[in-house]
Image (cartoon, rainbow, N blue to C red):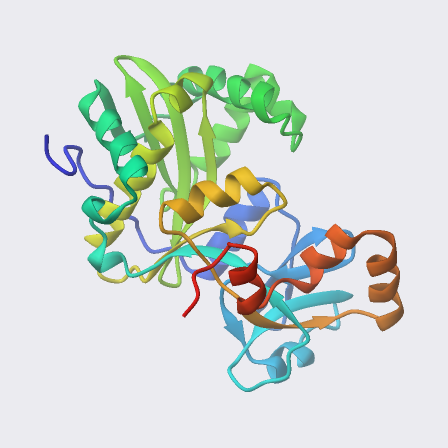
Length: 297
């Protein structure tokens, strides 16, 4: 058994404006202020389209007249009053399956020893036809509610059509014979592979396909020198999802950030919901260490 028996994927470069167009086409609510794209993460509250990046506070303050409350990572030494906690896989050039935790390594090996294949999907009909049952399995398990039209075959096919209008977006699929088990949508933007969507069927979980796809992605990224990191969304309220990433080498970053929000509103959020306040304020490195979400220096 080799470390990586499948053909590596190569991500085409996608600039930020193109990625913003992709996000808007697939349902994201974005606004551009100055030269910067912002995503609406909840009504009247925005974060950068690339939330793992540091931004110059002086520049963002000049260009936010079109948005209300916002939060973004700041340059070293600039004022901050909160943290953003993106989860990233970095040090890609030194990634080796042998360095994974024993139980994780065992799961990757089991998936590699199975008859599961991994390849890029470029055929719209294949993804629309075979991916729909994967998506329905995912919906039943997670109760995911964004864009309920995708539950129907026609709505799912329209989503697939939109995705594949952007050839820079990479759709990676796993298969047991002709059966699709999972698919992953990612883009390479400003040196980061962004894992935008990962959809696994129940059978995929039993066969350790999530480990296999992550392994494939890290091996492929290792071979593309312009890739600095893999961004795998923000720290979430789901301990299980966070733990999956962290146990496999994902790092929860404590990125100093500026939160532009009325102090009275912050106080009300803190009084009404500690979890909502914690999510808004974020966690510093020491807090992450204390909670087991980050390694001590």
